[in-house]
Image 1 (cartoon, rainbow, N blue to C red):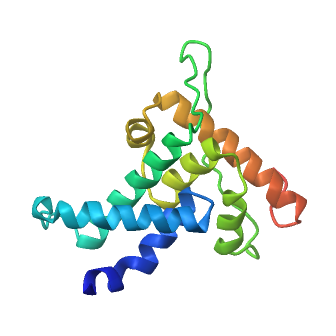
Image 2 (image 1 turned 120 degrees about the vertical axis):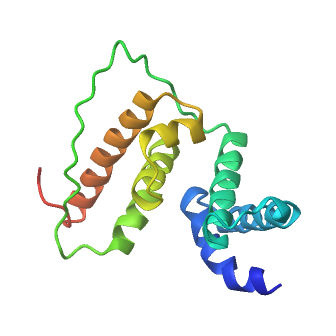
Length: 162
């Protein structure tokens, strides 16, 4: 119970970043805790318990989205050539809370990739494995999600014009 009390709020917020519905995020978090407690014997102190649990919550969230048939279309690598734009600057007046709220309003396929990349720190190789999509698809969803995010931030007068 102490572990649950210590980590439940943070893990709910992690689940909430992926599944938009608060009730569903709570279910995901509960299922992740059950899975963690059942597999506690497999926890090795290579990472902190919180990091291990967070990974379970993320995977549980992704699994829930897959159940809802999250459409992550694979894009033919021969057809698409991406130019990576690493410019993520926004006006200094914008808060991280506003950015996260705006990310939550994006289409699921963009929201999930942006969340994994920006908030969780995964690279495209890891995202492609987690979501079972090609790396180029991860990059495309990130690029398109970033563009939509910037456009939405511009409409509320926050982001700089690029």
